Image (cartoon, rainbow, N blue to C red; front, side, top):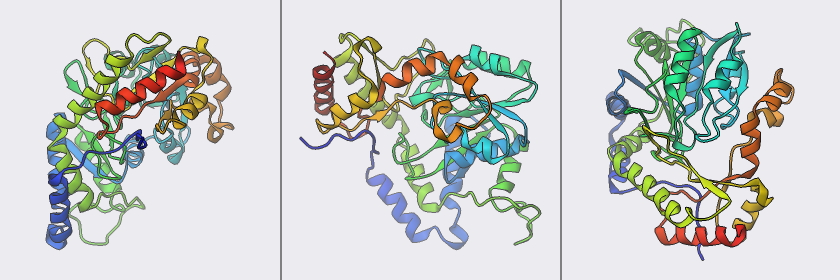
Length: 373
């Protein structure tokens, strides 16, 4: 059997044509044509005022923190379960990451844990729309408003997801997206920052271009800043993908539906949850194994690998990573973030590539059943 990939894009002739045109024509006076088109279409899709294309979601978080004025000694709360790209930029600006627990159903930031982590030094929170799901954004926004805390919504994994009819990425002072090759919408590598705040938008445009005011005279830098721009080729690919976004999301939801129909009666496991009034776009179909079965994720992945099936581990708690072992508050996080530490050891991401077929998913599910039962 051919190896079944855990992630991968769906590329059509449209993407090839757009990128070919960018290679041929997006130079000199046309150098920013595709970036502008992509940003405009992305902002319209989300229903926000501004979108800025960037080389990664990590750079989008970095610029968000800078634009919000967060720096040395400030605290920023993040869920303990997420990729380190969510928290690393906090260190870039000299601030301190504080790790909060997740909700046992959505696997996203727990509003209750978020509130418990707030101190006089808390300046921002970065809720993460994990694996395409969404947290209780109404509760998070209410708490953040009460304490005058900025919100950077990490929607890296959740293009097209919705909470109460509003699209993921549109809830915070900024929203940030990833277009990594594994994502539902891809530019190979790339990211986007969105906002409704003109002050943040202008600051981000300045910071991403080596500290030059847009429209100012050439090579007159007023601050030492950053080189965070997306190429025309990436933007062309992203624009083509965005024009197909509905079918990309529908395919993701179909893939989850195939898994659900095969595994819904299998005892001892649970799949991604979709809360009421939420649309989950299921970036990574994920299974949590009941710990009573005594099968941890590393062993389960090894068994699936032996059957030619690629899987990924459910994220390790950030507070458990060697990268953070010397940070203050790690011991407290390990003690308080009970849900994160209970779920993480027993979760894996199943093959969720946009190219995966229903027959392949049936094969994956049969292999999983053989291992678990």
